Image 1 (cartoon, one colour):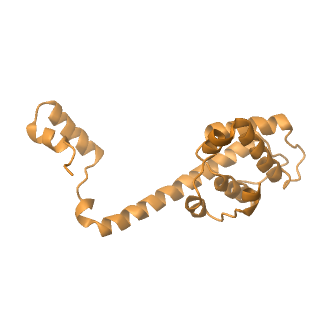
Image 2 (cartoon, helix red, strand yellow):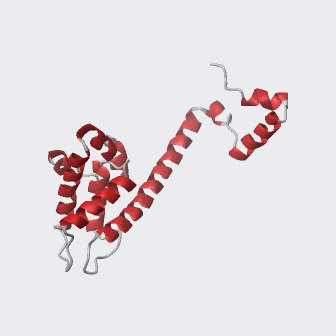
Image 3 (cartoon, one colour):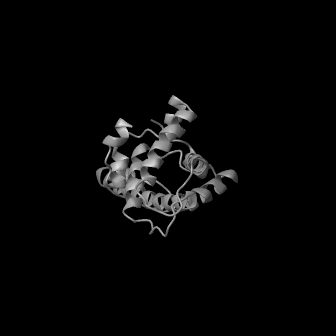
Length: 170
């Protein structure tokens, strides 16, 4: 919990810059029960933030955590810290008297879309920088539909197409 208490990601980019130790890696290193216990602490800390009519019991928390582990095994502690902070700020929707597994899972879906969009934007920016630094290399690729056309020609015995599909010599 010391690490959990010390991290303060403010954006998804902070999450991407942090040590990338996924919860599945934590599970592999420390065991499933250890990961579940750790996530119960995170979840209970989050749930204490809310004053709602229906509170989640231990079985609901455990079920929700198992769904999270199954659905988002690639997430890191920083992902969950950012997600919980964003949820507390109401960025995924308002609370209308309940916080339960369904609400949390629907919020995680929204966080996942947000996260994927930021990852895509970052990847595009990095690709643009790479293209500027390596202009000759940037024009050597083909689109998938072009590759499929070349592959059809190669399958039909076209020697030029067969040559194009050979891996480059280093």
